[in-house]
Image 1: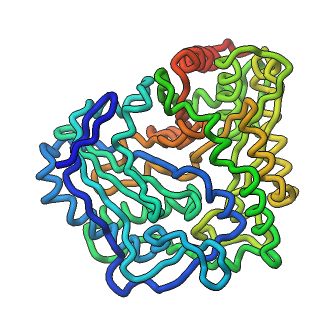
Image 2: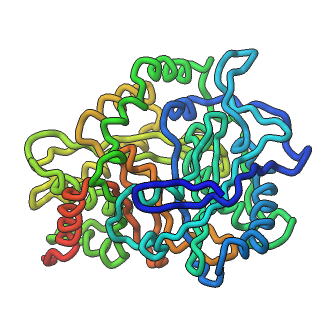
Length: 446
């Protein structure tokens, strides 16, 4: 057994293997990168944790004998249809552009580990040192696009940790894979229990002579967004903590009517983002005329002309950035200011999601030096529907937000129409954020 040491816990690695699609089930093919994909070439992997209650699992040997064989088999069957995740990012011998190469025998690394940590503490919403989650995240080798780890907590539960390169799939595509894998595993059958098959046709995304793709690649060489992101990371800070805040449906309705400003057409997404943005402005202090920025992504599949199929697999998201002054966000009308700023940007997307695509990289690189907040995940992904047969997840987290300065959003695990918000902040900021978050929800209604 190998042992991984961290500040907070020890994880014993029990098994390391690689899982391939069934032999001769995957075409030998290459997928070119589109301009939506190249934006993410230098961005660090997305890391997610899916926690499951499993109190009947008394020891790791029990899991190895009863659950692991079917988990591997279902993963193999899922990769048959989601084969780019087992591929490699390489240079095309013809075009010398980067592409995703897929050949028979490709595989995904799968690590099985055991932890003696307090499972119930890890799945709680309370602030925890960010390092406590690190042993649950699989290491991603340079040649791999996806890595998986299953960590057993005897007599308590288990965690499936994933690391995936963003260049191969956006959030919607990756959760499509996870739910498909879970569906096959839950069915306990070799029959593919996948409700929708992914589509890989890159010609559906129009880019005359690869103009936009070439431009973005040139900009990436100049701006190096991975280096810019280092200024937003809190992962290495000794007092960095992670916490989850839940906005119930009742909370969202209260925000909609707060201080007498009834906003019936304001979506739950906008209200949640606006509330978090104002609370972060207060938590970071120094309210002034300095501009604050709130970046969020939009799925472009239905916004392109012609529209893409919902099951298109790859990246197809565009970004937008709302702006407001720090003093306005922290003032009495902060929620109204934030909602209007975000709504304005969403409305402008209706004028064309690609109208400013040529400025995506310069704007993003410039803003990381400012007070910017971005969003990872979406309540629309339905991450809590990822049931492998152990029931719905107890908790789903995006660990990688600690390296990007983002907040994470997911639908409420309580199925009440609410939204979960994940943050990684320095401890003093987290304390101030928690106070502002609660105060904003308990303000007296007019």
